[in-house]
Image (cartoon, helix red, strand yellow):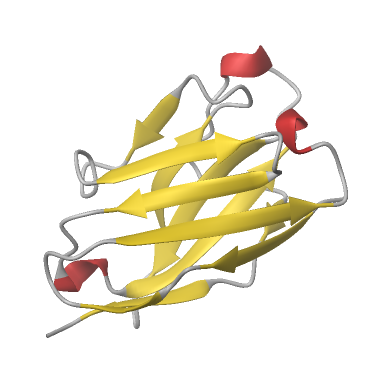
Length: 128
């Protein structure tokens, strides 16, 4: 089992930036495909981005492509989400997720919500 703890959320003005982090513990971090999701008030949880086990492959939702960057540091057991050019519609609770995904090798991605492990979330509010 792996435990996930997000941090880095907060209040930011439109056009600003934030960097979220997700610290993992419990199992070998590099064995897990990782993802970021978000849930805005009154809306369903939505996929944001995913990254492969070796960090060489990434995939983004169209709504964040070109503005957000997912990365991971397997030596530090940490997942990141760099968010630039933030908009009001990016306001949500952001969750990181991990899955052992028993296929696909080191380059596999998981752009759905079928993850086994989830963090508790961190609030991101974009407002002037």
